Image 1 (tube, rainbow, N blue to C red):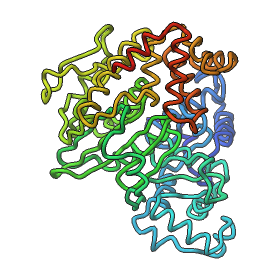
Image 2: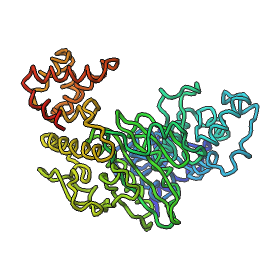
Image 3: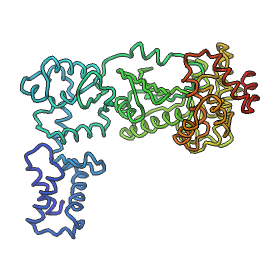
Image 4: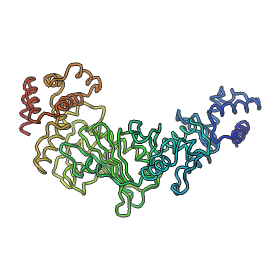
Length: 479
């Protein structure tokens, strides 16, 4: 049973007429109850604020109220009637939203909507999952929320992965201050642009890492949609459709797809790019997000596989599968650069960095990994299409960076980078020599996009020759 003061307080706030209770008002009521009962704060937590925190946490744990003390935004609001929160969510997650949510002149004016604007926003919500602040205000009008309470409700939906917020830089079609996307309502298929940006075959001199979660029978309800929301914290730009997301982070690309297969569901996560450590970082973040989401369904059966990058890069549609929990939850041992692990090519030396994540804190061993990987990619090109080394690609320049070492600044100075630019690159990427070098080389290349590759290669050769790195150029030409 609750202590008598706590019970009195619960009764008091349950009679509070507003749908949502601000923390300030909750504290005022708490002090009033304590004064009426002549209850000392010393016997609780010593102050009204601390005492109230203890009481609210207990009432939240017992389900009497909902209050999220661990979130700075959400802790300002107390849901003293938990059913109110359920009703607010139902106002959005309606299976018959199209029929039930119709334009009302009075509500529309208060929400800043005319009928034409309302119908356009409603259509975008039902097909693209996009909800503007105006449409949200319209749906929640009868709750009579203050702007602060509404924003807290939005933060709550974000916390529980019910939606994600589009960056303001992407809000080109609306003047709304905030736009949310609810993946549950997406009805569109992948656009042709997706297949252009993510071709079926991995492009030349690009690394691809992939893993999959296979649910043999049925995937947990809303697992994919929740994962789609969580993905937003790791990316800068994205394109969504009903069963997939193509996202971008710096120069890396992420493809997240859901597919029904053999009576079950396969969720595949792939990353492509030239920055090996960034790719592993992105893949592992998403992997841990998925593991965390699975905790909500502890009894669900799922198979977790890491796809063999050797098979993927060769264009094999049925790649060898490694147990993800064995390989993705460790780090590559020092001085191990090649492994013979693919059962489909048991005699092939595969770069270890394509199978086991690299230690992000260990930069000194990156050079040999890049060199082994570059040679491996070149061998695949020779086998598949004989396209050569592609030294001017991002990964090709990273290979040069791995061979240059600490004296890289001499080479890029000869290529025209100013000392101030070099120092800024060093400040932006401390203790990451290969990253510093490859960024500088890419900056040089990108400034001369109009020039022919032969001209750029001649410039690079001259810079290497002038700085006593001619042997590196000879090696590049051999490969």
